[in-house]
Length: 58
Ligand SMILES: [Zn+2]
Image (tube, rainbow, N blue to C red; front, top):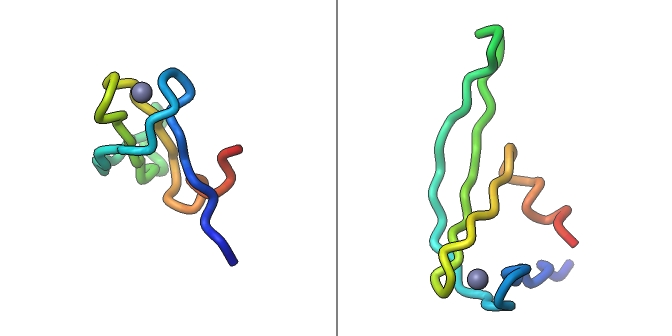
């Protein structure tokens, strides 16, 4: 399998800074692991709620 190349929708840069965080739901029942990818060129932030969902991006 090949990993899709993720590119910034604004500037087409493929350099990202990755940050991880957790997002608690309003109801306090679940918490989602959140991944932020910050474009190192223009600072545009892509956010994902599960690590695997990065690879669903198209
Ligand atoms: Zn960018």
